Length: 430
Image (tube, rainbow, N blue to C red; front, side, top):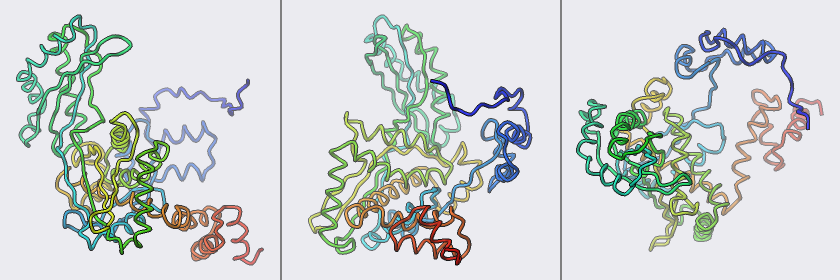
């Protein structure tokens, strides 16, 4: 079958592209893709990040993309009121957190905790003739391993972090048994990838010698199950609309707990809130999402990240627990000016505080989604907010946006074709 993909006369092998300035790269892209002047000008807008900084954050930078940053209000975490910056393009996410947090605010808001700030790095040894003995030989070197690891990052040790523990596992694979060494490292207020990866790299030759095999991979695990953030809250039954609403929400949770098809969407909703705060603070959304979804399947079946039930007084209680490897230092968190500004808005001084707030946001997001599903349906609230986007997409400007959005919501037809016709009527053209 022949390809219908559009052909380009130019080659994508552009010599020296990475050495060009962002402006020069953009000119090359403009020529290659045949961009019009308006598209090129849009890509040339720097947003709220200096082009020089963007050029040093990634390879081959030509532009930046701005994501709206909204503020979630009504959030009380461990007795402290916080405003939470959230970076997302989905219109209903911030509103859901605001509404959910408001409904548990008078009951004390969110209570949170953190298991530790420990991260895991894995060192893969293959080809050991006696894997069980290799495991023991490596475990015998725990004190030496601790010294090697701590020598890699004296500043981390000075700040109270460093090597904490050693595990050695034997796993069966298609290629035979593998001896997997886990180093457990307290990375304090850093996410910790660079620190633990450096330690794993440094240990690799020693592991080969002690285990008498060949080391291949030596890298952190994003299943950061030593770094669990937890949040819980109580929603008074009268604040959420009564027992019917409560029971419907619990049934929605039970569906997600029992069925991976529902759990996938259930947890996606949780991550709507979590990823928005992770992104706003310059942390690694992909690492957090990978860890969360793997944790949801840790018992061999994918299930809900949250748990919901009624307390003895009939109130709705919710809890969440998931790995949250986020930091305040290093990476984009340290160099992106907007991420720094968002951290100042949050007023956090440790990575644990940040993770605990993020967990609370995830729980609030889940509450909002389940309540909508159990009552009016997800579309009513979501599409009401989405109507503004549709209005703008069809060309509404100024006061037309709100007016057109209201019409679409009233008609219960938040669609572009309807919006085009209604906008024409507003303008007296219909």
